[in-house]
Image 1 (tube, rainbow, N blue to C red):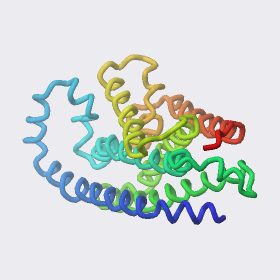
Image 2: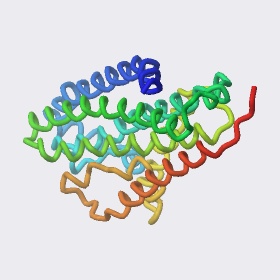
Image 3: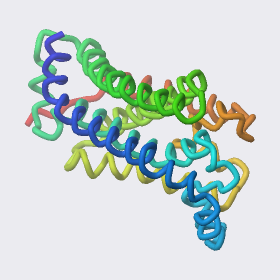
Length: 263
């Protein structure tokens, strides 16, 4: 319990900053951009349609669906999920990589607390942070889903995909933090992890190579499934869930068995 209190105390400012940033971006999209887009649909469509199709695919622009709020949310989610991935990855790297960064891992493991207990307490800390954030995210998503399209039930399911996406990147970052010998910069590493996922999605959208979707982590939990979209293959989501569990199991085993060099 002391570990959880300590880690939350160290991370709550980061959580607040990320939450404020998300709220600002979502309000800008749902209050500023979407009404303008909807009211000037024809003019904007004419401009966008003149752009190369590869460019539109890379940035998840679908002209056939963006007139409705569900389609606009799908477009917005491509970038909101990138932010969420970086955020959750930063939590995983910071919580599990702090001792390596300051070279006091050996000191932590000499405390009267098992490695299993330390791992669980650290993991629960990040989980609490992600859950708190997703409460705000889901509330805003559902509010504007009701305002623009009476989509309350759908938006609950769609916004839950943000939680699963963040959980996936949280687990991946924990594994990276435990595996790496040293983490020089949490923010740089988290950004690298997030943008790596975004680039793979862009390549998948452009090339449309069969099987590449299974390597696109930001597409594992795509909310398009809940808006009557064309995605009917749930195998991608199943792969995401399997990897999500596999990463945290591997991280747990590595954490309790790895050797620590005294500094």
